[in-house]
Structures are given as C-alpha cells and as structure tokens.
Amino acid sequence: MRRKHLPQNLLGFSLPGFSLIEIALVLIVVGILAGAIFKGQDVLEAAKIRATLNEIDRIRTATALYQDTFGQWPGNDSLATSRFGISVSNGQGNGIISGDETNQFWVHLAKAGHLSNGIAPSSKLGGNFIIEGDLTSKKNFLVLSGPENSGILTPKQAAALKTKAGESDPSSGLLHITEGVGAPPNSCINGSVFNLATKMPTCILKVELH
Image (cartoon, rainbow, N blue to C red):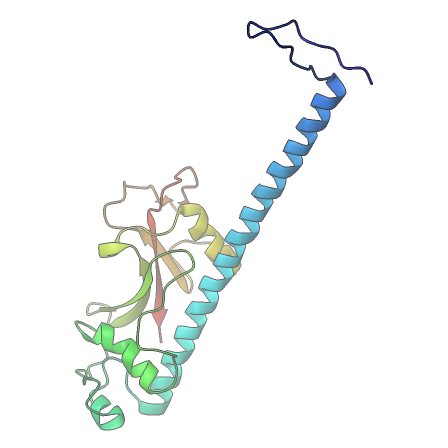
C-alpha cells in the first residue's frame, strides 16, 4: 500500500501519513488494552474483597477457639500469665476488651497458637484490624478503619464486602458499615443505601465478635 505524504514541514523533511484503516486498527488495539487494564483492576479488587472476608473469618474463628478453650476473651483473660508466662499481660476478665487489652488480644491469640504472630493483621483493602470493646452494649468488635476511626473503605468497596458476604443492609448482618470520623454526613451511607457517588474512603467496618 502506497503511503501518502504530508507537505514538507518547516524543518525541511516530510512526515508519513496514515491511512484510515491503520488509524482504525490502532484505535481497536488501544481499546482492547484499555479494556484489559480495567478488567484486571476489577479482578484485583475482587481478590482484595475475598482476602478481607477470609481474614475476618480467620480472626473470628481464632477468637471462638480461645473462648472455647479458656472460657475468657483473648486480651481480657485474667489468667493469661498463668497460661502463657510473664511475656503477656492479664486482662480484667470482665468480658469487655479495653485499653491495652486491645493489643494483648493479638498476643493472647498467638500464644494460644491460633494466630501466627501477636501483631494486628493488615487488610488487603488498607489499614489494620483493631479490637474495640463497647461498655454500653457490652460487646466486642473487630474494626477496620483508618487512623482514629477515620474512613478506610469507599462506599463501593463497602457494598462489595456486604454483597460478597450475602448481605445488603449496611447497618445489619455480620458486617456493620458506618461512616468514619470526620467523613461528610451521608457520604458513606445515604438513608439506608450506600452512597456510590462518593469516591473517597469514608466508611469503616465493624464485625461483632462472639
């Protein structure tokens, strides 16, 4: 195929032109590559969602095993030093994990052989899991949030977690989604649905431990 040539430019040399067919082929290739990139991002995000739910299940199972074995909450265990030695600290034994007990929670689980180490695990979606005891409800929660309970999940990520867990209502079920500290009102949840128009991480996740 003979190429057409553009008029000679000011620098004294000519530039080759492209036929409509060649341009069309380039656009098709670019479109295919862009589609593959977006598809790859979706696959990666889905893998992070699955990994986060698996981590939640692992922590809940470890907590239940500890309670079945010792009859107390990890971190709050008042007999921890007699079980594991002086490298750990005893808890208050009142059933509510608070203060430094939230750090000892991971240490007790590791000493009991239910976790590989005594450090709070990180999430594939960002941030670390922390433990929070609520004196009012007398419940303990596994929390995924940013620093000082700021948002760590976008509403889209929070919705994907709920969907993958077979749930829909943000505030009911195993996974409780709420707005992070400092997030604009209704930026995570608007009414009873996720505000998918928000692209920033404004949501936090709470899972009740039993």
